[in-house]
Amino acid sequence: MDMLYQARWSPYVVGIGIGVLSWLTFLLSDKPLGCSTAFSRTAGMIERLFRGEKVLQRPYYKKTVPQIEWQWMLVLGVLIGAFLSTLLSGTFQWTWVPGLWATTFGAAPLGRWAVALVGGVLMGLGSRWAGGCTSGHGISGTLQLTLSSWLAAFCFFAGGILAAHLIF
Amino acid sequence: MEKLRANKRLQLLLGLVSGIVFGFLLQRGGVTEYDVIVKQLLLRDFIVVKIMLTAAVTGMVGVYALQSVGLATLHPKPGSVGATVVGGLIFGVGFAVLGYCPGTVAGAVGQGALDALLGGVVGILLGAGLYAVIYPWLQRKLLSRGDFGAVTLPEALGLHPWIVVPPVAAILVAALYWIERAGL
Image (cartoon, rainbow over all chains, first blue to last red; front, side):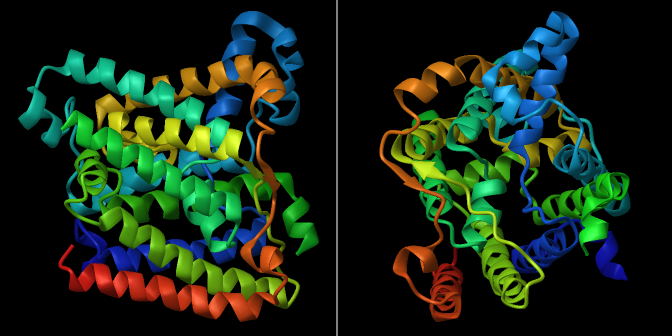
């Protein structure tokens, strides 16, 4: 039971846990783990609030209907699960700027916020463009041995490694 | 099983419970932290890759076993050079700039990271919304370039899945062993 209160688990324990969780989602829900589609649906729901029903006429929202479904609840669950994890380990903490960012670029929140926003836009765009993210392609796709997912995961890391070395 | 999968309310609950487990694991693994993601991309430590490869090996063996006995259906995603490579590289740059991904950003918010909430989540929503706007144009111009369809490696090779799964799993385990031995 001590394990429940430990702040950090071995990456192998975590990886096996996520793998086993995948078995269950395939078995019980016929769904692979994935997160980025939920952001498309939410963006559609928000746009609908402002612009009304005509938003649903966008071809993308005809195939990815802006509604709350399994994956939307999954992403909400991720937030709750991470919160519970930090609550149990006593590591919950409000932070404005991540440590590595602060030591390199300073602790001013506004700069980090602006850069995170730009990164988020690229990520939202790229994940939908590629048809999946680090979960949908990177874990669920690779475990199914899907060719597009292995290629996507390679490109995620190629772009990421290059950009990270330019930034730092 | 069909009844369970068709029960919409129960599925919403199962999605939530799966998410709670997923978020708990991601947080304990450390990948809901900006520093861990960026250090992976700087190739200083390999937590992200270790988690992903271990999950892929574990998941692969179980999901293909479930498929073999008719209890699971595979859902391979389609791909093309115009979609997968271009989108994947844009994602990669975003990955380094944001330091979270669409799943771990939610976990980061759950552990109190305000840059993940106010920058990351807002940005990803804007980016996903923007994609829906430019999608018709992209679809005409780019997405089908170099289309290779929704295929898995066993399908592409024309081999039985159980001829392909064991060697691939062995290669991934060997890669993990090598990463560990290299002290990364």
